[in-house]
Image (tube, rainbow, N blue to C red; front, top):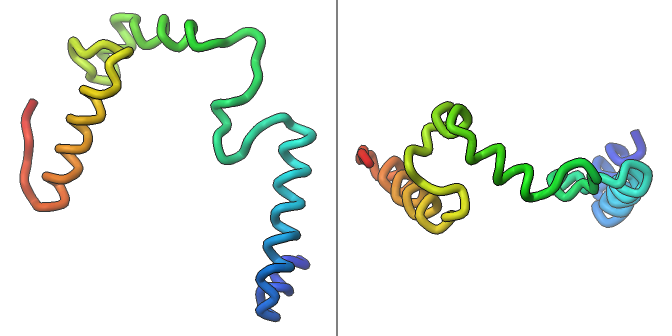
Length: 95
């Protein structure tokens, strides 16, 4: 593969340019952003569909969100951040 050859030759700028061309081509023909596939344009799905999905009792129970509303990301982020920090420092946390 040409990219591998460029890397082995320490031609990193050229390797990056080739990689970038490949990614651009994929995105152009598929209309999918490979770094954030959630931005895909779909006429049959929108944000409302996700809100409805995550508001269903069986979904909320399956993903263990309790009484936290889907539209309250700050509270969820705070809990995840605290949990992450505690795990990093060997502590457990119950909510």
